Image (cartoon, rainbow, N blue to C red):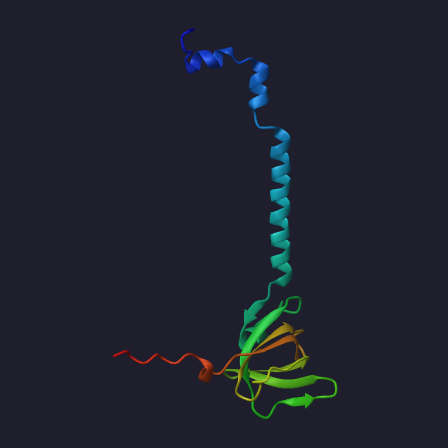
Length: 154
């Protein structure tokens, strides 16, 4: 029986052609990098198109380059400013944030809890003149829907 070969002796017997076959193919590396690059690009492009800046009414009034962006604004619906057109499914109202008010136009489904004093978030575009043109209207739930503190157990 021949003596066992050491690892060094086994590696010395491997020819250069056999070593090349064991290497990772360069084409797999290039394809992997191309796929990774495509995924990174798609994630970046998707987040840029759906991004919306969140501002207050006073920040929007002082913004000079907001006309080209989709913006979200939060505020309370001002009492006495709601004008509904049920035929065209259109509503106009004002939101107030501190001392600043903003007129809002919205066409679409209005949440059931929408009323004066309710906090809303509108998303859309503002040209700097005229009302804010909202594509989305969200009404925040009043505090009565929040969980109450659980009673102490005895």
